[in-house]
Length: 321
Image 1 (cartoon, rainbow, N blue to C red):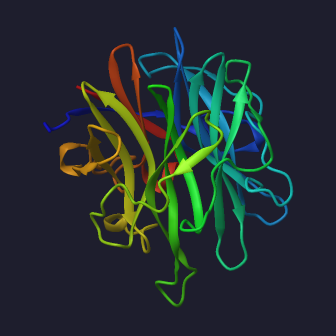
Image 2 (image 1 turned 90 degrees about the horizontal axis):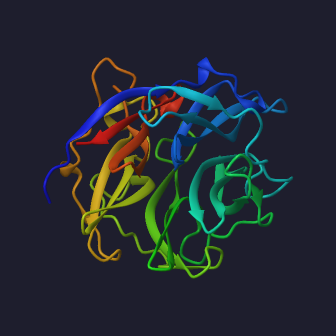
Image 3 (image 1 turned 60 degrees about the vertical axis):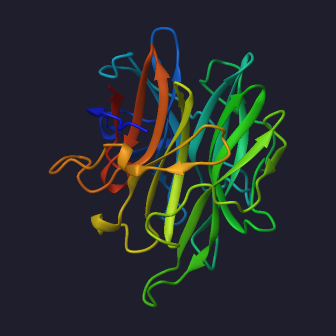
């Protein structure tokens, strides 16, 4: 595989410069694109403070941008999708939401978050549909379409869905467990990338507990947010990875973007060195690169991603040269 030359376009959206719904003030995490004829809509997860306890609630918003990714045309004025009811899998947040056109509808695969007692959170993947060109989404039900199972005990999320030859393919993450790496700190989680298929986008069959991307950092590597694009006759997966602990403020252990390729959607060869996309010193992405999303627009391949502080100050883009 030849190396990929990416040209960074800089940070293209800062949430603090706009009025967002749900009284959200910061964060534009996990940007995901929906391309229209004359603009591109980018969904992202932003945060508000829960007045009951001062913790964050993650909500989905969007920004419409011109196709040069230089000008903001519109920002969502109303909530895109409500959070779950009391006790549901998405009660405390949705992050991320993957968008897919299918037939006359737009599918939104959500990653719902709910707080726990012994550990901070668990997640599941839900499905919502839009009938108004992606302005709002209605859940098909209160529960998830993919969640923890016999050999994937926790933290199923980050679903990315693509329809290939009439089959729905989902790449997602599953938790291998929680561990208290430091006795003075809360437990941290480890997760890997898995794969499932479906004939209708609702009923899924997992390749149960098969980690499809090899580790670069060892068994305590956490892998997140897969995104897949076909370039020529090869499928390319981009994702982010980090150490499972001491990653929040230690930039040497924080998120970087990884890469793997496949000819058959089954066996993946990891090849991070092909990517040629890394942090930029003294910049908004000097400490980490995370939450990638790759999409095609007008014959070009773009990559959206977050930088420092997990997207607190917005997201940027790069184009494949």
